[in-house]
Image (cartoon, rainbow, N blue to C red):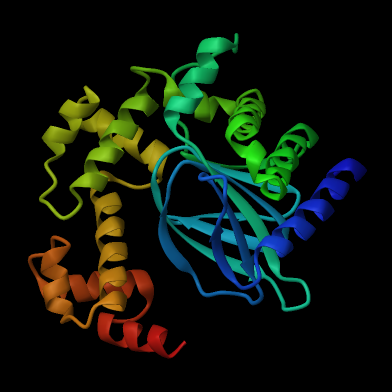
Amino acid sequence: MTDQIYTFQDELARLIESFTNQDGVHETEIPSLFLIRESHVTEPIYRVYKPCICIIVQGEKELMLANERFKYGPSNYLVASVDLPVSGQIITASPNAPYLSLKLEFTPKQIVEILSEVQIDIPKDEPKRGIFVGQLEESIVDAIIRLARLLKSPKDIPILAPIFIKEILYRVLIGQHGGVLQQIAIEGSSTNRISDVVEQIRNNFDKTLRIEKLAEIANMSISSLHRHFKAVTAMSPIQFQKHLRLQAARLLLLSESTDAAEIAFRVGYESPSQFSREYARMFGFPPKEDIKRLSVN
């Protein structure tokens, strides 16, 4: 990293600490910008990542998508281009040097608007993984620090935040991995069509999945759907749905005093025993034991 990037990150670290007086994910005056602080190494946290850019200024994190591992720290940035069920674990943090990061969420529409205004060589239509880790560039950090500084002058946010966010997305688009974002926004591209399938599964994860219906939405054959879907998400449509169901079930079990069998039916399982087996396979413990363990922690 350049000296300038180190300087920007020092400033970002001070800014994040000033706006996060406790551990956790913190919303900001900029609706799509979140600040994250953690003082300790964490267990894996399961959630669905929306399209976003994540930058760590202190500490390290590991992200799991299916069986793929993405490790990143202050010299990298991570981008998710579609909704993906992942698990994330902070692997380097301490009270004296807490994990500090920021996350900027975006929409495919914002990418489309930029592509309509600039001349960018569009890559061949080949589906690529919907998440990547890139080498941090000075131009990206420069735009991010200007966006983050707006938190100290909220009156400027309505006018300047959209400009800086647009610049950040543009810098990523013209970067080494920009093709991943470009393909998601191109109407009719295989990645764009897979994103429609992802949305369909997300909105109906508790219902029976009909592969023929998904292939129709993607305008692909069933075999092409499976190949392209796995290229983007690292899993099959059925596996993707299973991840969504189990994540939703875990959240319900944590928030409600409800029997695990009832939760299993609510997220779409017909067999409580199958639910229990798959839950233990994903989270390491059967539902009752897992929730008891998390409640104590």
